[in-house]
Image 1 (cartoon, helix red, strand yellow):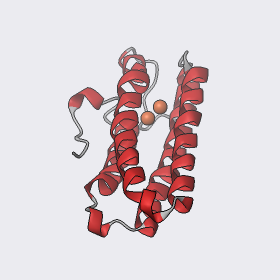
Image 2 (image 1 turned 180 degrees about the vertical axis):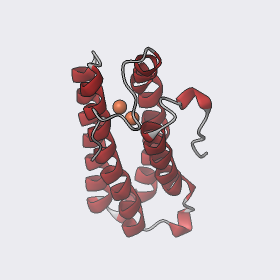
Image 3 (image 1 turned 60 degrees about the vertical axis):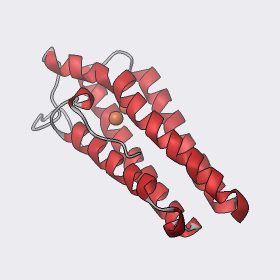
Length: 148
Ligand SMILES: [Fe+2]
Ligand SMILES: [Fe+2]
């Protein structure tokens, strides 16, 4: 089942939400792929695109968090590091797993994408919504924020 965007995931009605929507869009590209369409190359291509996007997104978030003095930002950066390492591991496995293990790996990857993308937004990123609501920063048109 695909991941669906909903209002509970909204953080800033701006750049961060756009990033999250794109991450979900790419993850869904993977999740939607039918078994007969799934080749090792295609699987790696999609996860690699997600990996690149998430690295940029995490940098953006961390920069924004620094600009507003968001407190749990060290822990948040650790969590980003773990998420990105997880994507690295998935790409490694997709590259080197024996062909017979590929379907199981694809299923495991789908489960990971479904859970951690949404969990990270709901449990960790959501703190930024309160900070923004409290007027501690905004992600659009704020000179203090420089996006990559
Ligand atoms: Fe995020
Ligand atoms: Fe985050």
